[in-house]
Image 1 (cartoon, rainbow, N blue to C red):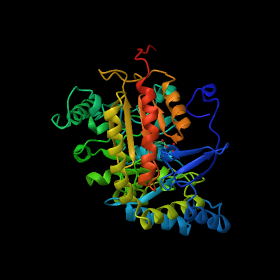
Image 2 (image 1 turned 180 degrees about the vertical axis):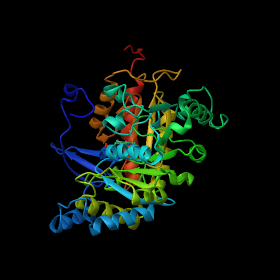
Image 3 (image 1 turned 135 degrees about the horizontal axis):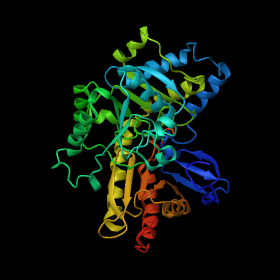
Image 4 (image 1 turned 45 degrees about the horizontal axis):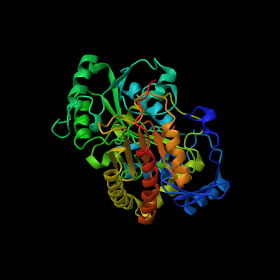
Amino acid sequence: MVWTVQEREDPVLEFDHGEGVFFYDRHGRRYLDFLSQLFQGNLGHGNRRVIEAIQRQAERACCVSPQLLTSERASLADALARRAPGDLGRCFFVNSGSEANDQAFILARLLTGRPKIFAKYRSYHGTTYGTLGVGGDPRRAAIEPGPPGTVRFFDPYCYRCDFGLKYPACQIHCLDALERQLQLENPATVAAVVVEPVTGAAGGFPLPDGYLPRLRHLCDRHGILLIADEVITGFGRTGAWFGVDHEGVVPDLMVLAKGLTSGYVPMGAVILREPLAQVFEKRMLPLGSTYAAHPLACAAALACLREYEEQGLIDHARRMGELLFARLRELASRHRSVGDVRGKGLLACLELVRDREHAPLVPPNIDSLLPLEIRRRAWSEGIHLLARGSLILLAPPLIVQPEHIDEAATKLDRVLSWVDALEPTPHTN
Ligand SMILES: Cc1ncc(COP(=O)(O)O)c(C=O)c1O
């Protein structure tokens, strides 16, 4: 029962087991997992090191109060602090990406004493009241008007610029617009600005080069905290350890989940800059949860970090990303339904269009069956991807090899031929 009209999902794909970049259904059919399930399985299926680490931990200790220190929690916090940029040094563990963003928003309010959170229109930060309501993704309709203090700003969505401009000639005009909006809202009431370095399912576009350093500077000028939602982009997904590393920017709070444990055990985390964490040495931190830093999750995360490092998977993801984008651009040159190819590393997005004028295949906020049909087509070709609105998102496990990218391109070619042949009928709501 997730993100769907239930009856539309019939027949449902019944997962049986996975191996590396493949998984198999109950009937033995093989699927190339070009979504790492839902962006979380960075190490692919059946990683022995992670499985054995979980098994060993299960034998030793599974049920530990979050008030007690465990060696695995301390080792994980150390390992993350070593990997995280700058002085991001203190970890606050939770159980999912939604919870991590939720807590990051509360932490930002506690630390600044200010009420407002600025988020992009095309963003998704989670499914709790606090995160669904802050993100701009249409799913927010479920709880609108949502949490007080939420303010949304226009994205650097260069393919369909909200200001009708072109990057780089625009000199990132959307940040000038954000600055004006901050002034009108009174920056002294703004706790944080939250961004994903590459927008995931809400748009699939990277922040353009130069955006993050300028946003960092803007936040600094007004004492506003910068939150990087790295739930998808963390742990090599974009070809760097974290999405912010491409620009050498250190956010105040970094939000992690998914690749942290490669999805083997649920876990999320917020990493804070050391001076911010210091505030809670003398002040009450009114946050925490029963399963925070669960020993099985810590064991899985530590094993994942070792795999990323020892297998050199971050560099590998960057190299494989170059191959993937070369193949996707070649497909786009032959398929009239592909309007844009974008993303970073092994996080790729195709934006589908309906006609030569580049009308979106599915206009925003329209309930269409097309994405479901595209996903079914893809499954019938034996490839797992995300189809949402006019977007196809691809995010293979970091262990992907060139032959898998070739196979994916062949399968996608057939899916896109089917999309090309669709009648250009306009949508009505
Ligand atoms: C960017 C981003 N943030 C937060 C979340 C929420 O994470 P979770 O589903 O683990 O709660 C997601 C989920 O896909 C996400 O893509």
